[in-house]
Image 1: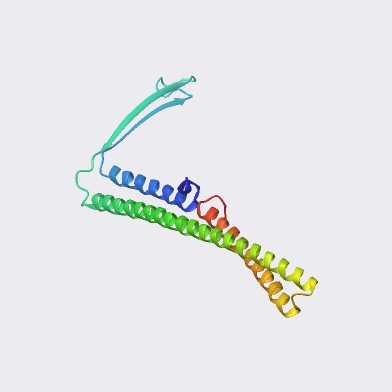
Image 2: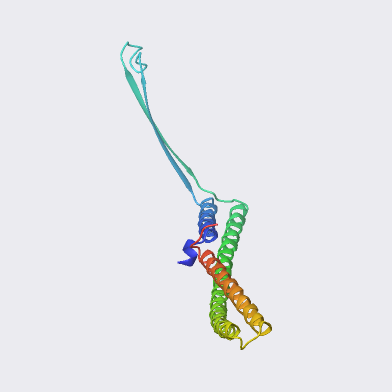
Length: 186
């Protein structure tokens, strides 16, 4: 499904089809050619009956056969060249599929790492909130001085900003994965 949604895979599939057909065209140069033709000519005055003032007609037909007996290896070289081009584009298609698999795996790993980072940042933020709550209660009761409450406030702020950054990293990783899978167009 990932390959079907990627535009470069669709274009390479079309190119492979074109070059496969090019091989067929190159082979066709070595095959006999047959052409048939038929005509019917209507004239007034009638040429077949002494120029009478009436309609007259004539039928003619023909067949042409061309059999290439000696083509000086030109058609064989064209066929080999077309086959090589078709193999090249099939190889490009397989390389593109492999690169897409690697890209999807990379962004999938980034997404899982970002999710782990977010969960860790959430745990740190919860600990910092509890630490700040106890420090503020102690400060309000007069048990803890301002020099102890300020680092708790700073730790909470740092944990909160890390949580926000982790959430942004997770969203970016998810967007990159969706783009690699072909679900988001450029």
